[in-house]
Each structure stands twice: as C-alpha cells, then as structure tokens.
Amino acid sequence: MSIRLRELIRNVRACKTQADERACIHKECASIRTAFKDENSELRHRNVAKLLFIHMLGYPTHWGQMECLKLIAGSKFLEKRIGYLGLMILLDERQEVLMLVENSLKNDLQSSNQYISGLACCAIGNISSAEICRDLAPEVEKLMVGSNPFVSKKAALCSIRILRKCPELVDTFVDRVGTLLGSRNHAVLLTSLKLMREMCVTEPAMIEQLRRHTSTLIAALKNLVLSGYAPEHDVHGIVDPFLQVEILRMLRILGKGHAETSDQMNDILAQVATNTESAKNAGNAILYECVLTIMAIEVESGLRVLAINILGRFLINRDNNIRYVALNTLHKVVGQDAQAVQRHRNTIVDCLKDTDSSIRQRALELVYALVNEANVKVLVKELLSYLIACDVEFKDELTQRICHVVEKYSTDKEWHVDTIIATLSVSTSFSSEETVCSMIALITSTPTLQAYATHKLYMQLAAKTLQPVLLQLAVWCVGEYGEML
Image 1 (cartoon, rainbow, N blue to C red):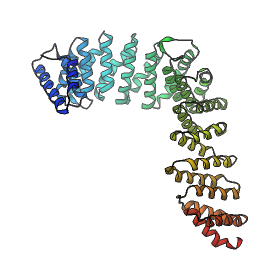
Image 2: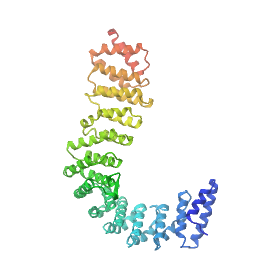
Image 3: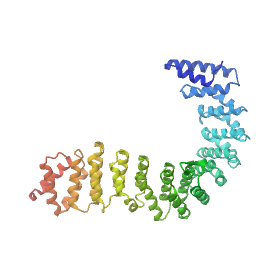
Image 4: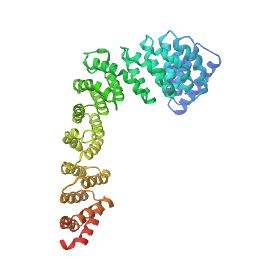
C-alpha cells in the first residue's frame, strides 16, 4: 500500500542514523517503482511528489522523469501541477527527453484554464531549451496581450527566458511592451518593466525604440508618488515601492546619454526625491534608486546636489547597511560633483571612527578620493588618527596611501617631511623604495629644506628607530648633509 508524502517525511525524520534513512528511502523507492510499472495512474501524482522529496534529500531519481511527462499529459490540474513541478526539478534543458513535452506545453498554453496556462509558462520560463523557446514564442506572445492579467504576467516573465535563449526574437516582443504598460495591474506592470530591461540588455539598440514609452513610465511613477494610501501594495506607508524602484531603474536606462529624454524626467525625479519618506526602509530603497538615476542621466546640477544630499542623510542613519550603501555610492559619484560631496566631509570622516570595519574601509576609500590641495592637512590628520587605531593588517596599505596623498597634494615642504616621519613612526614594519626615492628627490631639489629634514631625521636616529624607511632616509641625509647639524 502506497503511503502519503506526509508519512514518508515523518518516517525519514524518525531515522536515527544515515543507514536507517537510506534503508527507508530505498524501501520507498522500490514501492514507487512497482507502482510505476503497474501503471497505477490514480496514485501517480502522489508517487511523483514523494520522488521530489527524495530528490531533495540527494538520492537519484532520474528513473521517474517519464512519469512527470505522463502527469503533464493528463487532464486534471492536480496532476499537471505535480507533473510540471517534477519537470522543473528533475529535468534540465540539456536533456533530450524534454523535447517530448513540447506538444503538451503548446496545448496547455492554449488552455482556457488560466492556472494551466500559468503552469506551462512557468515551465518554459524555468527549463526550456532554445529550440522549445523558438517554437513556442508565438503562443507566449499571444498570451501577453490577453485580457487576463494572471496569464499576461506569467507570459511576460516567460518571454525573458525566451529572449535569453533566442536573442534574435527581441523584435517580436517590442510592440507587446506598450500594451503591457497600459495595464493597471501591479504584477503586469512589474513584469513588463523586467521584460523591457531584458530587451535593453539583450539588444542595446532597442533602447532607442523603447524611449517612446518614457512618458508612460513617468505618468505611472507620478501617479504612485502623488496618490494617497493604497492598502493593496502598501509597505510601511510607502505606495508600491517595488514598482517605483523598477520604474526608476528603467528610466535610468532610457535617460542615460540622452539629454531630451533626461529633461522629461527632471520634474518627477525631484518629486520622488522630496516627497518620499526616509524614515522607513522601503522609502530609502526608492530614494537610493532615485539617486542612482539622477547621477546616471543628463540632469541639471541642482538635482545632482539634491541626490548627493540624500546620500549625506543616509550617512547619519543608524542602520549600517544604509550607511555602507551611501559611502559606496558617494565614492562612485565623487568624480561627477566633488564639491557637493565635500560638503559632507565631516560626516564621512566621522565614519572612520565607526565600530564596523566595513564602514571604516568604505569611508577610508572615500576620504582618499576627497583629498585635494585645500584640505590635505585636515584629512591627513584624520587619516593619521585612524592609522594609530586601525587593525595591524591594514597599517601598511594605509601608510602607503597616506604617503601617496601627501606627496601628491602637499604644498608645505616642512609639513610634508613632518607628516611622512609621523606616519612612518606609527607603521613600524612598513617598507617602500618608492617612498624613500620620493623623499630623497624632494630633499635634494629643495635646498631650504635640507637642514630641516636632516635635523628631523637625525632625531629619529637618536631615538634608535627601527623603521626601515626612516633608517634609510636618516642615514642618507646624515651622510649627505651632516655638516648642517
């Protein structure tokens, strides 16, 4: 007598050793094989469900693949559901047996039952080969523009798989995107945006054609930003954040490198940036995508400053994930508007004192990017404070960077010498021929500095320093300019 899946799970959990589990599984596999040989169709779906559980435990189940195809060919939804689940788990696109299910997939795509059509779309979207995608693309295309949103969203996701397997079919779905964007259904809009992004990745030339939908996307985003409370897709008081994020990502792709399209977005991006609540994580996700979009497209400088100020607000958030994201993004955009980022310099420097090492590391990278001739003394002072407190494994790298920054931006020669000596004194194991050569070149080319540098380095010798770079510099200076002592 065939046992139920629940009983099999209970039996497996009751096994005290690996050997007991194997014996239990082998016994049940033998029972399932017998049932398959007897062509017991009534319990076939139950046996395939147990086979899926056995597969999840890591035991071989390839011998049950054909039973999945038999279930898919059946007429009942319950059988098809288990059959398609088995098909997606037990098979993959490289197996030839998959070709046998193509006719069943085609019939199910044409089914009047939306759930059966949805199952077929799921199967195609997960494991279909290039041949199956090419053959069934026309059927999927028809479902995309149907009146049933449940089927339309499944077909749109299924189309993404088709484009990945057969990029040459991208033209087939371009006209269907406009129809999908006209839907008021949340899921259909989400899936259509994902399909649009896949088109842009598959064939970048499609971006030009898809730009005609910019006004539709802006209108949809404006409706979400300005609408009141909508309980259906509300997340902590933010209206449909998932859809807002997807629209912003798509606008970023459409506006990049195109001034006319970017101009259309200016107003709505400003509205999103100013009207979205930042107290909730869902709001922060939208603001983050809005910042990325603003920095990627052609916008006026005022909007770019607004985006950087949002990242500045992220830096004082208590959530370390949000602060990390802000530091990472500021590092990427510092080249576009360094002056706007400089306004948040004090907050960034404070991040060097954070207890989280990943925050400190990202803040460090950003501080390096912010250093210039005007602020080099202030920022190097902070870096030296961090050098004293940082972990041993980071000291050499940090010392190298401080030396590089001082050499590049210092305008005060004496301060240059003092800072290099102070830095090397903290990092006792640091060794660099580049730093030695740079300092020797500086002292040699600046006669007014020779006496000062020799005196300072001689003091290091007198203090019996063991720092290798300081030793080389001190010995060289005393040998060259000892008469100045």
